[in-house]
Length: 177
Image (tube, rainbow, N blue to C red; front, side):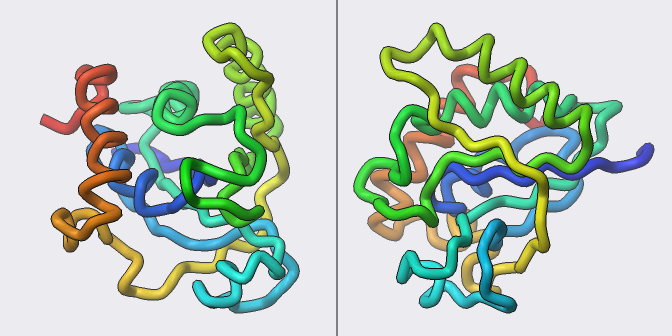
């Protein structure tokens, strides 16, 4: 394994993104958490209040020799709706915003290029924020591997599972073997 890079993405509930990115070959580590807010050591309860400014995110560590940052972004834009401001389905609030937190100028350029390329696939304008990465705060332990540990929980069955299925059908070449 070579040098790893980070991708930090918010696209609604972090359980959805985590479940998909765990299936991608080249992802070596991932954590659900919070980024982009003003409160130090935010809790799930505080973030859900919508007053901290944080987004629910996944912090993905990946091997760029196996999977590219561009590929991770292509998956991101395929599994969530980047045209809805501060919401994904019934999850509403700034904590559920669509956001790409970049870790380098190259990641920023790639994010903006991918947004321009996928914009024509949506009927409405893309509202995804592209912002510099800030301090990542790991979410509470019970949020980690949530879908894996709770596949039959209601939210997982009706919200997370369809996103995982969509990924599996559309991105077979990226899946772990």
